[in-house]
Amino acid sequence: MDVLLDNLDLYGPGFLNTIKLFVFSAIGALVLGTILAMLRVSPVPILRAAGAAYVTLFRNTPLTLLFFFFVFAFPLLDVVELSYFSAAVVALTVYTAAFVCEVVRSGINTVPVGQAEAARAVGLTFGQTLGQVVLPQAARSVVPPMMSTMIALLKNTTIAAGFSVVEAGAIQNYLSERGYSVMIGLLWVALGFVLLITPLTLLQRSLEKRWSVAR
Image 1 (cartoon, rainbow, N blue to C red):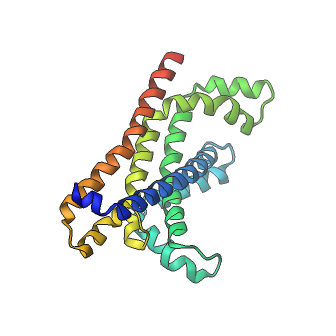
Image 2: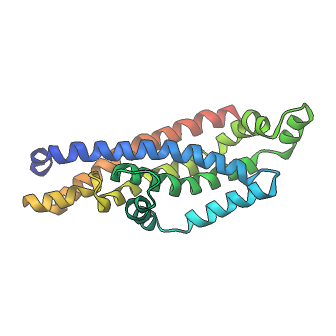
Image 3: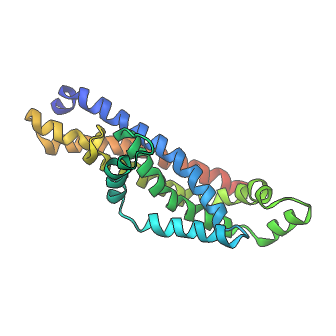
């Protein structure tokens, strides 16, 4: 307990930055991933190919390499200047979006084809059919895999510690410099992640229970 109480100035900001990384990256990944899923089921071949290419590229690229690119290589392009935190958010977003895309696409595939055909029959466009008919129904079936993806994203935020972002994964380095037990410090970090993941798990169970009844 002394390790935690004596180093609250590390644990507090560290986990606060972890939460910020997770929230910003989760929002970005959900938006981008949904757009990519729409591309992957689009009737336009070039859009389907673009969505498939993105998923293939980023899903099979190690996250650490994406961090290296956005932290060290991207600034050399002189397009826009990113802070270490912003670069971490971008890396996590573009990586996780590939997995979100596949989760959403799998949910879309569970919706009976007749639903989309009926929507088109009454004059809805492709975008309206997806947004008003297909995606609301698909959302019910994607809750478990989507929550698993979000939990994986939360854990992946620890990689940012290796790229000068002060978050929970970096606490061990500071504890070592202060002469505290790194092992005990890591146990507190692990407990912190358990506490962060628990609300996501409870949310998943709540949504599953509510929507299973709605079916």
